[in-house]
Amino acid sequence: MSEKSCLFPTYARFPITFVKGEGSRLWDDQGNEYLDMMSGLAVSNLGHAPESVKQKVKLQLDQLWHVSNLFTIPNQEKLASLLTNISCADAVFFCNSGAEANEAAIKLARRYKQKVLSENKYEIITFKQSFHGRTLATLTATGQEKIQDGFLPLPDGFVYAEYNNSADVEKHINGKTCAVMLEMVQGEGGVIPADATFVKEISDLCKKHDLLLIVDEIQTGLGRTGKWFAYEHYGIEPDIISVAKGLGSGLPIGAMLGKGKLIEAFNPGSHATTFGGNPVITAAAIATIQTMTELFLPERAMELGEWMMGQLTDRLKDNPIVKEVRGKGLMIGIECVHPVVEIIKETHDAGLLVVGAGPNVIRLLPNLLVEKEDLQKAIDVICTKLEQHKTTWKEAVQ
Image (cartoon, rainbow, N blue to C red; front, side, top):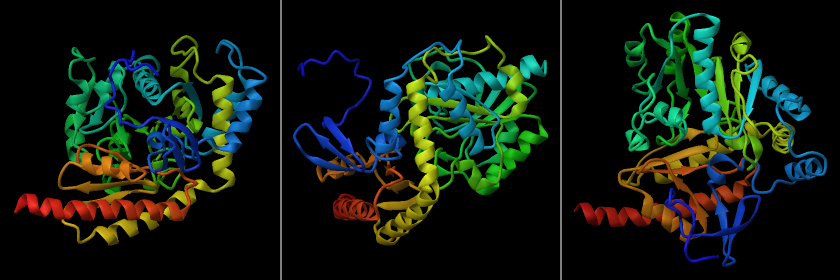
């Protein structure tokens, strides 16, 4: 590898180069083994290189890689059927990423109001500390100024309410409002689950004011929180759902799911993609959902997540640098009283991969096939590192 990188330096990369992955393990170019509790940021939900997906992809590679979406692609039809069977949606648009799925959701909400209902409505209420992507529209939907810095002027039509505060949402509703866009768990914002009462009130507000409810399930979807989709924990049905990350088991795919009443808004020519939903990617996604169904992985994530959060809560309850352990299923955050970047680096040095969620939160995103023994190893390393930092922190504040 050349010493000089030809890449734009858009990532503050950890100094590790991985060359192989299998199950819950990764190996670097020095032969070091790591226990992975990141899953590529909630992507490798079946672990690295899952055999069931690998076989289907290899078969498809021998048949057909790409045709234009101007033709019928059978794998798309099959995958769309699987997704509507496990959700409250009736139709699917395929794309290549979570940001593209959220772009499609934004466009569908506006077009439905303007073209189907003939209403001049376009404004979308999102939430402070949310994260919806890095394209111009989705970074504007993201309620974090640091994400938007340097990209002015931003597109019009987004306002930001306080998360878990339905009264603040209602204050932002006006004659231009067409939708509310919500994460059931704010992932990048700190692994913050939505309150049940808040979600119910948002759903009721959308019905009262004839607004569309968009739920961003990019990180929470496909079993991670213990249900196929996190909205199921709350007993609501969104109008639009965005999905990506775990759908392709590491291969790039996104999907926007919508209710039947919205189908008319996305008529031929209204939205499109060159690569979205190609035969190879959809083969991977079909195998992913089939494997998750056969192995009851959402239920497994619920059971293991409850156990892991219980273990962490009990072992960290007397540690003064830990404020809270929270999450849903196998999406867990440990909030500390100070930045966690050094703790994360130390866990990496100890052979455990975790990631942050904001400056003060350690985020755990193990794959849904992870063994309980591996979760125990992760718990032991994290608790040891936090115990060591407890002493350092006490000395610093005295």
